[in-house]
Amino acid sequence: MQENRVRGPDLEKYLEGRHHNYISYAQGARFYNLPYWTFVTLAKKAGATWALRKTAIVDTIILDRYLQESLKLAVEHRKESERELMKKRKDIENLEGLIFDGHKKYVRWDEGAKLYSMGLHTFQKYAKDAGACYKIGNIVLVNTEIFEQFIEAFKVDD
Image (tube, rainbow, N blue to C red):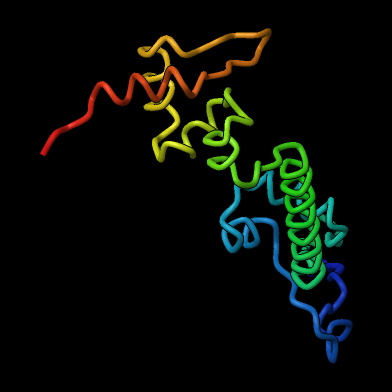
């Protein structure tokens, strides 16, 4: 006697004429080069998962759209963060002019490194060696007059 097996629906007739690409979780994990469970979580979060009897398929078009939107949001968030950082750290225009005119006697680490065309750590080392550092709270200021006298000691005669 032959058993009558119940077959699942013919998905081809439902998918015919539609522009969707479906993959399984395992195929998607390999395709997107992600760990299996990371891909499953991502697909569910994107709303691209279709649960079938004992398996699930993922609509790659919905998933790709979700990834592109997420990328745009991440880029916008990064740009906003950079703008906020730039607002906090304002570059002082004409720094050299202010120092040489006597309007600005003390500089911070990053200003001094830019002013004397040195790396940050090199400037810190020489400023400490010169004894030109003053610590006020969490801020370290460097006296440019003392630092310049220290640098003059290394003058090379041709």
